[in-house]
Image 1: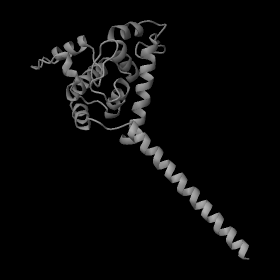
Image 2 (image 1 turned 90 degrees about the vertical axis):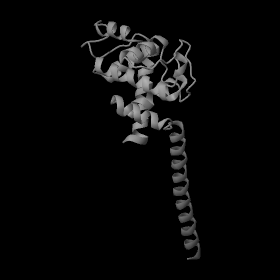
Image 3 (image 1 turned 120 degrees about the horizontal axis):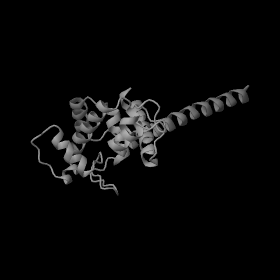
Image 4 (image 1 turned 45 degrees about the vertical axis):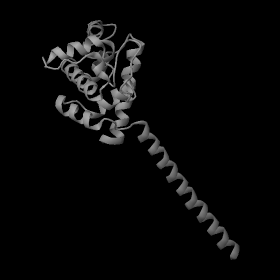
Length: 190
């Protein structure tokens, strides 16, 4: 009888120990995920999302993909800031709404400016392209390229959705942003 009680105690200890370990691993994994997908620049993102009516999870997905939250990030192509805007795009955006601001390109290293203008661009693109995936291709690959692809039956059947993205970088970009957006939605916005 004593052996049976001892065995039961040991089994219970092992069982509850395993539950504790599983909970601990789940907690560690969750913390790791949250640290990999932070809500940095929350005030700026919230303001821009509200101002331009753009999904916060999408904004965070783009920032994560474009710069991984480094406000000084600069691409090999010359894009700058958290949302990686190109010089010509930034100049065009400043004239689009005819604002009084006279920012210089280097101002994109200021998170508030980069987020505001990047989200402004997303808002404009969302009025041009009904499908978010297509909008993301335009954000990365350029409007001219996407318009050309949409008019080509080799790349689009309906002129709205791209079945093939001929630029591998843009194809990978849209997938990564969609993945990051989905993770942000699950972690913070669901």
